[in-house]
Image (cartoon, rainbow, N blue to C red; front, side, top):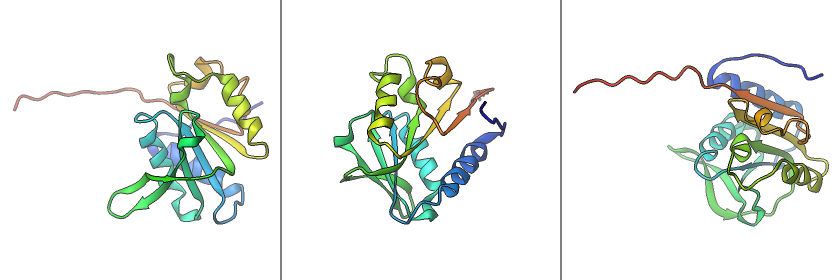
Length: 163
């Protein structure tokens, strides 16, 4: 049975992620490779990358599952963590699957993610999603997650003011 913990807010996503990566005792230069949707997942990948930037790991973003388009994530002064134009050869120690890949109409299946994990045998598999996306898409029984972070974005309050 999975151990569960309930946390809140952005620190509730970043702290357990950072603790998990730290617990793996990775070596400087080891790769953490994030797979996600361009645009929607990228800001969350960059946020996760900030949480572990002090570990001196090589962080990489892969759009969808197209590893030929893998890009290094670098710390850009006065901006933050950003995917660069530099391509990189993959050798992941950790694979991070972003929940956007599990959303309806995305061209990615749970079987493709399972096969991705098998192709990178020995790499740990983490997942970060929102609104129970992995569960709703049926990925939790197929994808071999070592860690899954599910964040809820509720309630959302929108205020409009006359100016």
